[in-house]
Length: 62
Image (cartoon, rainbow, N blue to C red; front, side):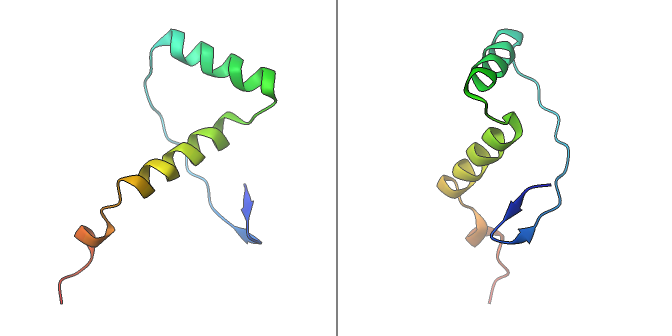
């Protein structure tokens, strides 16, 4: 479990499919930098969601 701003967040498992070469390169690149793969994917997902925000489309109409 990661702690962000003194708040605990529940993590869920997500399965994705990517090319074997891409997976190996990602694992290796993270390993040599001492990075946590899950954190990288989470950070990139949050950045993508921010850039592609649809929350206004999901908000109830007034």
